[in-house]
Length: 176
Image (cartoon, helix red, strand yellow):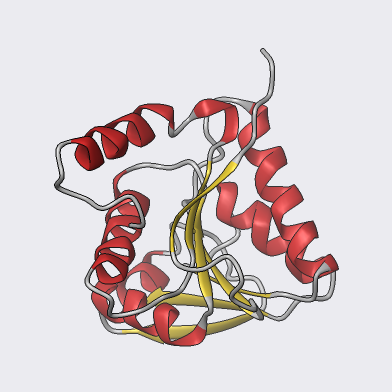
């Protein structure tokens, strides 16, 4: 299978100076090896560019890949995790510093307040929820932070087609 990785910026300004980035993802590595390889590479690139990582905590799957690579490369890493998830230990041990919050909503707000930009790795409902939450804030001009998708192996192609359709139907603007 041919590997395709593309970062698609959905909102915000690309001229924005990024010192801290939130990577949205999950504790599963996914089906294809390219997903984990891309997460590892992203972590390495963040470290090379001296960008600090804020993420949802843990050491498993794609979030583990990006956080371990960033940490080993010298980036500061902050995992923000709801106390309920920390108790279950279902996502592994957080890499770097850990900040426990009371709810998932607090988690997203805390991550938002610590970063200059967002990027979503391939994943499922939790990542999409966070991605759309942050993107809707951008559409409402609550923030102007870049928000992007890491489109590994065309994982997000159908979502991007849907968003293009929403623009065509005038439910979204092309700058969102």
